[in-house]
Every structure is written in structure tokens, then in C-alpha cells.
Length: 233
Figure 1: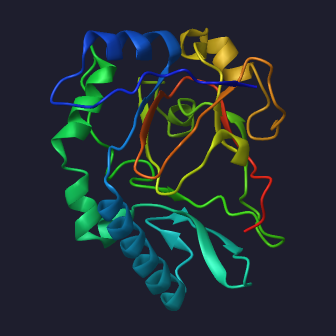
Figure 2 (figure 1 turned 90 degrees about the vertical axis):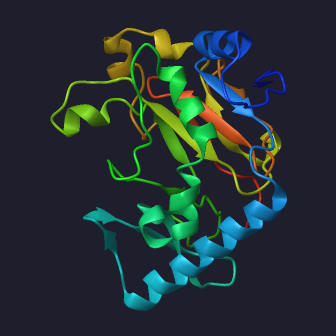
């Protein structure tokens, strides 16, 4: 499998022509070291606090959206998919106001964009820990855009903005994408693969070497999946 060859872009006050062209061609872009290590630790602490509060309160839904649960390597119950996290943390809410994130939204041009803090599932955490009791250690092929249809809306341009809070070299699993598929037809976007059921490698896919603090952005129309880690825990 190939590795995504992405220059070491730095996100400033505006996007450069090179960054826009790279995203337009591939449908995905990486901004390394978007967060420093101290901020990563702060976010992890906040997320652990929220998880413990929600588990103690017996929460199984947030704003009507179900949480996904599993067990860690010690057998403790954990939340593997959380949503609307910025509603439970002033730190995370303030982070979503970071001007650099609005710069990222400019990748939607000529459309106007906004951070969806209060829309769909808001700020989401995916914890793809692999244990014998984990039911959320991978995710099959899908695109993000068709969800608009199930919400009774027409498909609109969108971005998936991801902040990575741990190191994940390509060999350990993680995000896989089919570069350029954001320019496919609507028919191919809807029927090109079996949504979430198919998790088989694709000869066209590329993987990413991710470090904690990296930011990835991909077009909502691009085919992507999450490869299960070969490691337990």
C-alpha cells in the first residue's frame, strides 16, 4: 500500500495556492503539528473527564445521538464514539473558535462554510481501541456526504476535519483514503462500495503517517475507511 505523499504544510492565516491545489487534486490534506504536545495532553485530560462523567451518569445518548461503548484492555467500560463534546467542555468550545479552523473552512470555496459545532453530531471523538470486547476498532468504506439525504436535505459540500491525539504510523492501521474520488459522480459516491460493510483493502488506497497534534482535512465526498490496528490495546 502506498503512503500519501503530502508536503509538510503549515496552516497560517490564509491558505496558499499550493495547499488549495493539493486539496483540489487529492481531496485530503495534512497539517502536521497543528496542536503542540501540551495542548494534546490538555485535550486528552478533558476528554477523560467527560467520559468519566458520562459513564457515571449512565448517559447513552447525547442530544439524541447514541454513544458507542466498548471495553479497554483492562476490561473497563469506555466510550468509543462520543459526540457534541464541546458542549461539555469550555476548553474544547474555545478551541473551535480558533481562527486557523476558519482558514481550513475556506477549502469549501466558492461556498461559504462554518464549523458544525451544533449540527449533525457536533465535535466527535472516535476511539478505535482494539480489544476482545471492542466493537468499534475499525470502520468500513464510506463517504460522509450522503448523510444529508437521511436528514432530508440535498447533498451539500462539506469537510471532515480531524484532530489526531495519538501517534499512528501507517503500519498501525488508521485512516485509508482513495485520493481523487471526491470528484466522482453522485452515482459512484452512493453505490461505488457497500457502505460500512466493506472493509477490504483497495489497490488504489493510501495510508497516512500520523503524529499526535496533526490535523487532517478531507472532502466529504471522498471514499475512506479506518483500518483496524494489528496491535491489541
